Image (tube, rainbow, N blue to C red; front, side):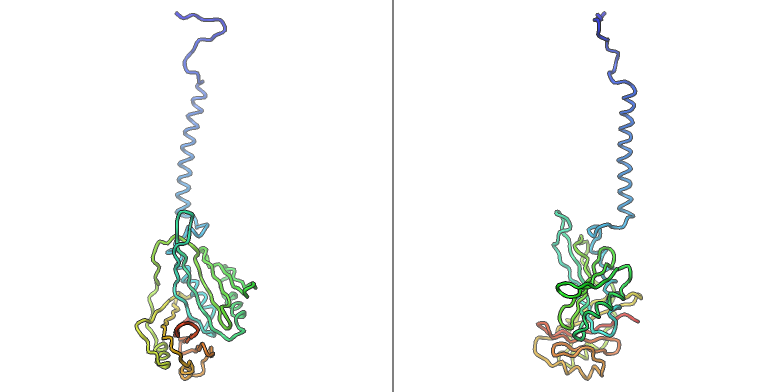
Length: 283
């Protein structure tokens, strides 16, 4: 039998009151439930919410947006100017995050026109692009520049690349590289325009002819075929009989004309003469 000292209450079991034990259990249950709810919401957000930054979209997911944007540019430029679609440029090694690398996909359209028509072309293209793109032309220290948002964080830009030259680009920015990007649209049968031009210049076409294709707003296809035709000097005046009065550009370094549905461009500004034939979007 234990002694009871004055002023000291003997122990009666657990020191924690029953109410506190129940509160602790409910707190644990609530914490677990909240964690499960957060996990479920995160899963649902990943599955259903649109991306909020471009790093959430891969190159493979952005490529169709780029392709359609190039088609929109071709349709906006129209048949009154000489244009050539540029091939895909994929730059690898950029940083998506400090610990992961990615790639940047860029495509574009180069336009040749009479000197002095660069700004009107930029304005006309900006007006013809879809309203949600919020396209506009602003003056900068480097000249007028078009900017537009094609959606999914794909940037469209246009700038004066030189006298009588405008370059439009469509770029994804740095994203995870999940695929090796290739053209997803089949090429239509080649027309005779490129072969005619190469023969007229004494530069027969070879198997090195390459092509790029884009989807038009109406669902059709625009395409450009081109070939490098050597570095030897050549007079582009030999193309005049093929133009038959439908000349778009006539300078010592560039000649462009319409030939049926095609726009033919001979560009001698690079290390090699480049011949290209392009078919645009209907309408």
